[in-house]
Length: 118
Length: 210
Image (cartoon, rainbow over all chains, first blue to last red; front, side, top):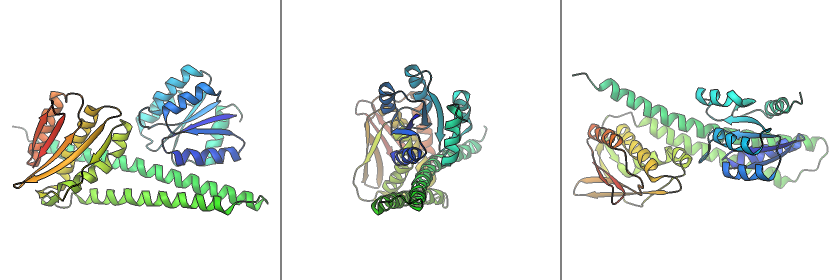
């Protein structure tokens, strides 16, 4: 299971990637939308975990770009805000939307659900 | 004529809300990083309990990262506290440079989302009398419009002057014209603060004069 983590807080996604690797996921991370697009061109990920609010390209804009490259990829959104508008936009198509800080067990559960591994 | 006081109050409340939301976002990120680093440390300790050898340097590195985030959180909260206390007095002696530094640090995330960097020139304190909260609101509104005008990957420079009792904040680096309705809105805000605006499209400069 290959997962891409995208958040402008590199400290956050680097630690999260390491923790997910201990739980059997092949997790890679980047800290911008442009890097994510490049990574998705180069790799076939099963799922991406996207921060909603990022400089230059929001998580929702990024998902639109990534969908064109890998239509089958699944998404989970992370946000520090948890605003209603973000929730509506994110929940419409994403598998789920989690508010930071997240419990690793909850994230793993949501990843498994998204990938049909319940 | 209808009173504009409720609208002024609402503008102030909206500004307070906008800044509070930005602060809460930054603090959420700080907590999320601490959460992951503490969780990572816990993962390593669990592995150590199961007999895996753990490099102490790795734990030291994670602890160091947590300390950096605590320092970051503390600095965000200090700014939040200064901002919250800016409503304490309707008029007092203010340092325009200090207020600008605070506003810029509070708007960093908004600027970075729009890929604009803001630099502030060194200067002595630039002092005057006024309402710190509404002055911050004016500086923030001017900066937001200048950030949009500067556009992606550009830089705004802020300079200060204090001559013959007149203080000025100069925002340099505007690229696109500021829409007339936004400019007239800003001018109204400036009048409420007892300030005036000077806009020079050819020099790409907006000046707030107190």
